[in-house]
Amino acid sequence: MKKGAGWEGGSLTILSGTSPSVKRRMIREIEALDNGVRQIPIYLSRHGLRVWETR
Image (cartoon, rainbow, N blue to C red):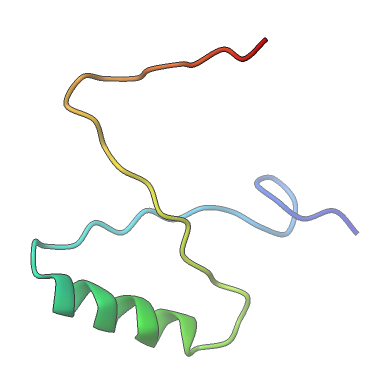
């Protein structure tokens, strides 16, 4: 069975405030639901999208 966007999965972006303790608590509570939801850390860049090529 395939999983991922368009099949049985998807993506939801939740932005948090600047308080690290509130952010950690939010992540713990979401992951405690134990329904396959997990955090994928991302960081927004003020420089826009950057791509690195490896050879």
